[in-house]
Length: 217
Ligand code: GAR
Image (cartoon, rainbow, N blue to C red; front, side):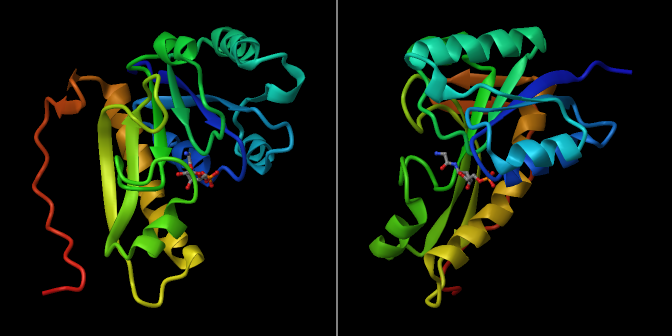
């Protein structure tokens, strides 16, 4: 059997994307194994969920560390102990230092609830609604030493409907997050990607998807 890429999922809260990654990795032909779930919050609900799902968990509490680098060195030590090869941030709400980002360049990915480079940062759904955009979505990207930047691996676009509230839009985007994150992690774990500037090229060409036009024409 092919060896699977040992992956850590970094969380801070609920962990629904983490759950989608663990579920996908249960399939025997999935190229990554979720070997660890690590949280900066010891009380993150995702930690108990991961434990229930049979995955090793570890909390590294950022509050008991003197600074960001010290916190990250503790995280790095845990990742080393578990022989982690890939890191997937899933609702991990800590900015990382250039040191940590460089350490994992090309081997660390993140999911963001917006179509980057639009709506970096927080409150993406409320800001998209306030701007009146008709299309919103989510992005999986490689992590670089700048917040919500880095070569884009995958995006899913969803319509913004007249009746939408922040909650309904967040839920529509989240359903797509759960689809594209496992697929994007699999592509990275399989290898064969080339990154040139901000563009990610795949050795395999996928079929062209249809356009999303809102309202439909
Ligand atoms: C997700 O929507 C994720 O995209 C977002 O936090 C949520 C975590 O939910 N991440 C960010 O905002 C990072 N900037 P989850 O814990 O249920 O996966």
